[in-house]
Amino acid sequence: MTQEQFNEILTFASDREKEAVKFYQDLQKKAKFEGMIQMLKELETMEQGHIKMIEGLRHKGISKVDLQDVKDLHISEFISAEPGLENLDYQGILITAMKREENSLKLYSEMALRFQDSELEKLFQRLSQEEKQHKLYFEQLYDEVVLKEM
Figure 1 (tube, rainbow, N blue to C red):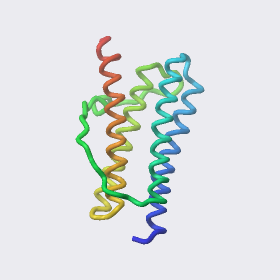
Figure 2 (figure 1 turned 135 degrees about the horizontal axis):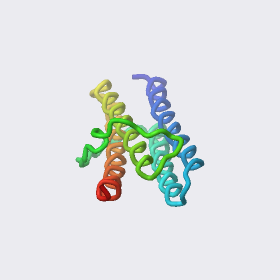
Figure 3 (figure 1 turned 90 degrees about the horizontal axis):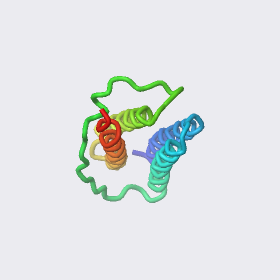
Figure 4 (figure 1 turned 90 degrees about the vertical axis):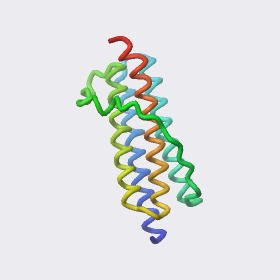
């Protein structure tokens, strides 16, 4: 793989994360309560961390990836529809965040399979693990707050 191809793939991954940052910034403008705004800022910060990691790889390359087993509650897989973005409440924000992380996890996992036995496989495995950790975070919040109220 050439350096140019490697950089193109990093740009693809970085652009996805930038899209997520913008999404959470836009939701902050629609949020009605300070707690929701703070949670959305946390989400934005998480995605910005992904961008920094990806851009760091552009300069340093990919070193050994230490993958840890991340628990999966599978809550997002049992929620079939995302709420509309117009009037999101706390539950709606959590569902939207879980679904976005689930979709990114699937994409990065598929990309890792596509680039087996290469540095890119390590990159996408790492990104996949990050998304899985974020998905777990939102699923735990959903379980602790929303499901306990039911």
